[in-house]
Length: 575
Image 1 (cartoon, rainbow, N blue to C red):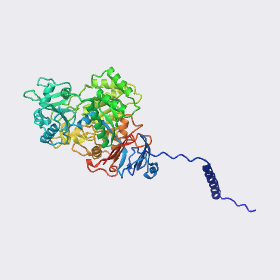
Image 2: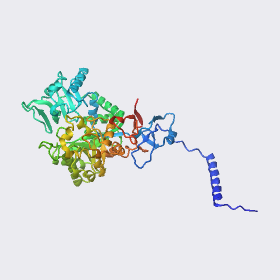
Image 3: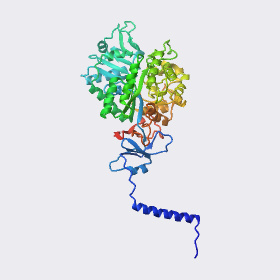
Image 4: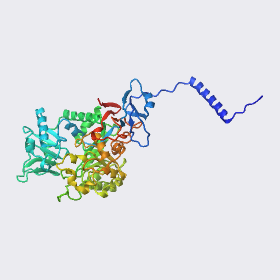
């Protein structure tokens, strides 16, 4: 008998054939593997920006429940579509983690949506007409309120009560400056607050006065504005709830799914907690307490107790962060500078002494609280860095680590640029602030560059230099100081356009997106559950109408939102 010798190839073929036959026989008597459950939501045909540089290109996202189930090609993820699956066709637009605004004032912004809008008005006549029209449309409002007036239309950047009386004189009227650090009031408001020539300036505030008569002009700076605010009727619970709902709806239209509230009163914290508990807070909110130079051990203990009560388990409301002020703003020369303002011996007055700031920061750091410090001038930034350095030197590291922050960082001394990375301090910055000085100025260069001069302007909003040192940079809006819309901020941060800007500080779009998403999540100790498009992360997603990574926007209004997903639900779709 002739025996056929198997070659290695024929031997392998026989083994594979035998194995395949066995597998077929086994499958015939074994139950089929269960099918993967369908997705609740599919976003297809987009350019997916996961936020993770190690992930390859994708164009679809699958959501199951409140979390991301998968990220991959549309063809592969389409198998997860079931009869009840909601499908969003991105039509080539960018699909990214929902925007996380790292610095805003949520309730204040919500209230401004129901006030007279003065933003962008270039003349006193236009401002007065807007106020006049609003007052006529709201005859029953006991006070007429507005927001956003610019400095440019007013001589010496200082409005007067007489100018506001010309628009509304039958009741008190108060108009907040766009920067939130000055108040313009009419005669009726001054009378309601009892402000006269004999009223002293409060600490950290100035009642602007007529130099001849000492009478108040109607312009109140910093803490002096509180003299009028205390005379105003407080908003009702219904009004505050309506303002919160309006703010949330506004955020969804703009692709914002997380916010970091910079300074939250106890009343507002209670409102947010009630909304969280009832399921009505459809915005992930990281709310900062407030502290000042007189903050005590007992105050810090109360903050920690509230932090523990609110907890970290329900991510629609979290805290554990405290807001403080080092200085004011450059536009009104209340920011603290190392060298004097141009043409003046003044350097600005810090809102706290360096000793008080350091004492309170060290106290809060010892309790494990995160601290964010408002600092716009280079001296204010230096004071904040010094306070953080001292706390790290004398206190043991908190269990969760230190992620202290400086808010705004509008100008900075050269040696302090590297200190952010060395101290592990986050630079929380607002791209739209770059152009606010240009838009609110009687001079071609703007009050901001006029007040800092060319040398400090070269170190203005140095986010790229700070980031290249290895420090964390996060972006926000400071709404209602600037628009909540991230679109113009994305454009500006990547082009650095504006006379107060500096093109070498422009950042790549991918880095800007991370500053609004994953980096912002890290800055709030929340990187483990949001900020990326990855399986297991919370399903907060924004879909833009264009792919801003491959086709950079030519204008600030070229970036718009097609859809917003919060907690796995589509909460906004562009009509």
